[in-house]
Length: 133
Image (cartoon, rainbow, N blue to C red; front, side, top):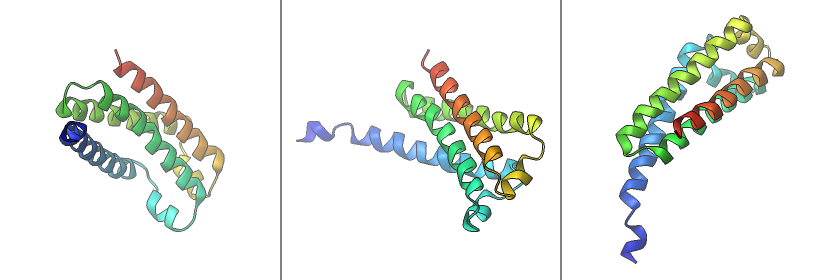
């Protein structure tokens, strides 16, 4: 019985560390965008939910890779911060291509929301794979 829960402390450490990083990412992402995702989501603007939700998935993918391949929790935290930086850079790159991104999301334009979300997921997949080496 005790052997089956022997990994519980590590599980909790990694989970709490990952949830902390997700919270930091959500806060940081909202700070770099010129629109307020949470306010728009509360106002039932689906494009904001799509872009923010896909950006969150784009961060969770490499974070899960960091959890899998890290040697300890601190290693995971470092790679999680690296993943966060990559995801924020992706947002800025999309803004270079689409300078009016925030205004388009505020106007509930799904094309812009899907584009930034897809870019986040694509970067997250590439980031996660790069972390596995």
